[in-house]
Amino acid sequence: MSNPWLAIALEDYEGHMGSDNVRQLEALSDLFKRALDLCSPESVAVLGVAGGNGLQRVDSAITKRIIGLDINARYLEAVRQRYGALPGLELCCADLADKHLSLAPVELVHAALFFEHTGLGRCLENALFLVAPGGKLSVVLQLPSEAEQDVTPTPYSSMQALRDCFALIDVSQFCRKLEGKGFHLFQQEQRSLPTGKAFWLGIFAHRTR
Image 1 (tube, rainbow, N blue to C red):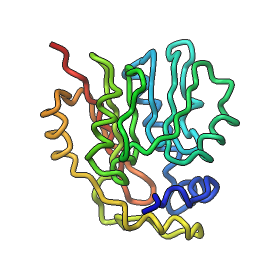
Image 2 (image 1 turned 90 degrees about the horizontal axis):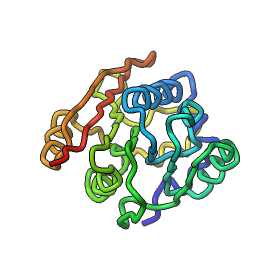
Image 3 (image 1 turned 120 degrees about the vertical axis):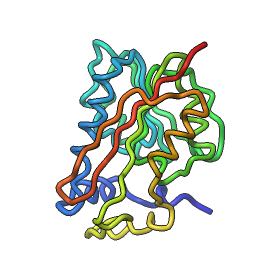
């Protein structure tokens, strides 16, 4: 079965995420910047990079290698056009739920609203594989709230194709799962959104023996 992300135009995704009743692009960019500030990575990989929201926050004096991964090659082409001058930028088109990655590990792997769409199977294994020894994984999860939990209706109707592949991730269970894989919670915080929803940022440190 074809992945629904392959049929969604980047303009629809960004229009939806930036619309008045969603308003998530700025918050996600801020949380990526927060992870960068806390970790000061020399290298970072962004899973589900889409159009590159937040890449403008990378300090190239600190972060020398930036990998953007996405299943949609058209999204990556947009990233190339927008951020091609960013030093050390690498773009990789891959379905992280389908195959194992063979990329060199990085000091920080960032996954924002990613696992809600992919689940915690091979995608999580790929994410952890990308974390260098002593590196960190930063994750943004949507928290349960009284606001609508799934894909918010907007004029960008193509986004509703994601309803059947979106599921909230329980933060406590996620933390226990990563603890069992050798990643302990290093930092956590919450970000409330004007729409009534909220995000959780968790940064996990890879234990080294």
